[in-house]
Length: 93
Image 1 (cartoon, rainbow, N blue to C red):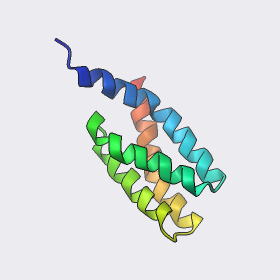
Image 2 (image 1 turned 135 degrees about the vertical axis):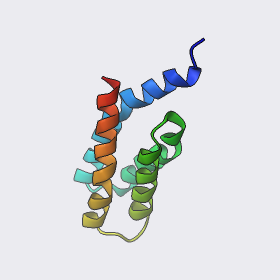
Image 3 (image 1 turned 90 degrees about the vertical axis):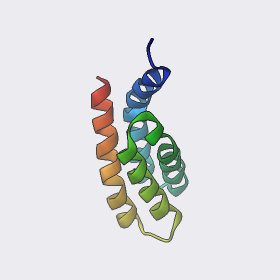
Image 4 (image 1 turned 180 degrees about the horizontal axis):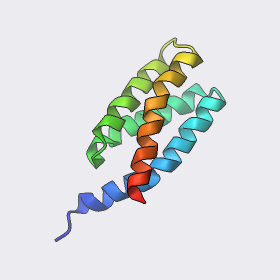
């Protein structure tokens, strides 16, 4: 029997490119609320679906975006997360 979590892991990886795009757009628009929302969602779900490192990176970005950090700092925190999401999306292909 197939593990039901396998299907969810595949869906997570398939949506990773969309999450990366949403995050990149929010960063470009300096939309702090969306950066927090996307990173929060990823921080909570990534580990469940076999992407623990993405979850850790998302939590770090969420902390930066919720605090007084400037956009240069927030973008720097986002880069490894964006790379991880793009890697996850390639794994789905």
